[in-house]
Image 1: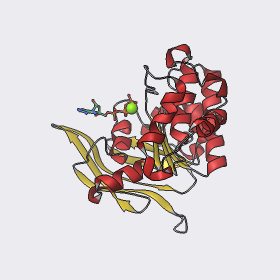
Image 2: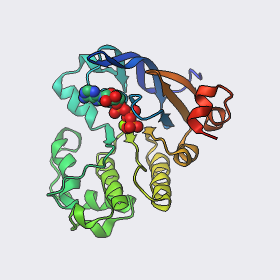
Image 3: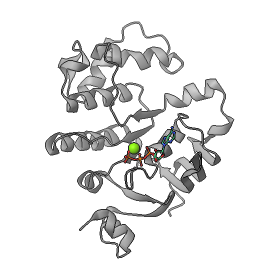
Length: 248
Ligand SMILES: Nc1ncnc2c1ncn2[C@@H]1O[C@H](COP(=O)(O)OP(=O)(O)OP(=O)(O)O)[C@@H](O)[C@H]1O
Ligand SMILES: [Mg+2]
């Protein structure tokens, strides 16, 4: 691997079990600045567990994670708060707050992370800018239930972008969407990377999404990073365990 690239996430020998169910068995993975790293793997291989370890939702049993040069197991609450404002996480389900309007959903992280921008008197310009970046400025006063699934995903992305994170973790951003809406989300992820220079980990089993969006692909298998390469490297791999995953 090219040593001149700046590493923004470093995962070293990461282990996580639930009882005697060993999910992560020594994952080693780096995310480099401004790249889109796609993580693939069968359902239940621990992809969501892996990225939950990166935001402190799950504590690993063993191993080290460093994000933007900070080791997670040595963080104070204050450090965690600061780090969370730099690491956006788009949940597998999208997860907008149902009882809040679109505007309130987007204001929420701004209020929660005052350490980053201070107290903002008028949040409207930031809320509008984030919504405009996903093409949904006209939804500001709607409730989540008034939006389609694809629109909810885009608003969730706007809510992530509003904090201007350096890193974005996407968990299955296109699942449950029709092919055209999926393509729109994929284009949006590409646009975000270009516009803001963000580094992203994108979990997906959507082969088209992986093909379009990835600078690099990692396949998780047996709780480890089994292989990595360009999309074409993996897609054309002779190893039957990799080929089986792409089901050609
Ligand atoms: N909090 C938890 N407690 C117990 N087991 C868990 C917990 N979270 C995840 N697991 C188990 O860890 C395994 C990996 O789960 P994970 O959600 O990471 O899979 P995944 O690769 O994201 O799958 P999918 O593609 O279906 O989203 C599963 O067997 C799951 O049941
Ligand atoms: Mg998952």
